Amino acid sequence: MATVLAIDIGGTKISDCLINEKGEILTQIEKYSTSNSADSIFFTLRNIVDKHKHFDYVAIATAGAVNLQNSKVIGSTANLPEGYKDIVFSRLCEKPVFVENDANAAAWAEFKLGAAKGAENAVIITLGTGLGGGVIINEKLFRGKSGTGAELGHIKIRAEKPRHCTCGSENCYEAYASGTGLRKTLQEEALSNGDFKNSVLFEKEVINLTTYDLIDAVQKNDDFAKRVFNMWQEHIAQGLLALNNAFDTDVFVLSGSMAAFVDCEYLQNYVNTQTVTTQTFVKKAQFDNNSGMVGAALLAIEKYEK
Image 1 (cartoon, rainbow, N blue to C red):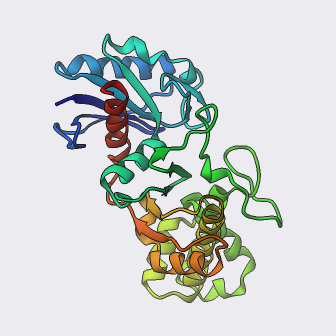
Image 2 (cartoon, one colour):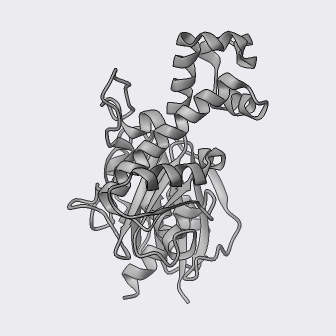
């Protein structure tokens, strides 16, 4: 049975563990802070590889778009240091090294073993500080002509006044449906909606309001907070509707830290009452933050053990 050294590289931390071909995590997950230097990141990766003695492949789930050869990062790494795209991952060891975008890897984990298991088509949305995603079409991971496909967070969902996105563009799905988008909506409504003065949130400076403040206020049955939260859920639903009209998918799976708060039944009804394609399902992910490592490991085994 193949064993994979799986590594997840994010903007704040790097995680690693050993995973087998069943997707089972075999060792304790170790975590390291992500350095602000590409050379230091490579040094951390080399130390991780040297720490483990027995594995068949290395599988890396990383922020950023990855080429079709699954060997290097080729774009969209705003949360990682300059020079990160130049890292040659194959130099980490003599064993094969497989690289995949973290959202794509997480999508594959949900498709093979999680909430999308048994579906032929699935769209996985990661709701966190930003918004990522992966698309499964006819049981295959969609990657586009260059490997940069399925940038779901950057479809356009609004046409009115612009809201800037981390990608440099405006009115992207991520700018509204992510945790950052929710915080922006909260602050905008606090400045423009007269009901804010009756909210439990009124005691805080608007610029200091966070998503945690909002969720806490919703749980206290605060009318203003519930209205803002419902706006955020509608933003999520608008994107899902657009994606269902494009992909006619069997299921949407919502993962990430903010997915814990959404109402899947509301989102599913919103999409199914307006879609021009067929009915779909909306579910929460079964995997936690380890899905990227699990998916990358499974993809590596499929590639190298054909």
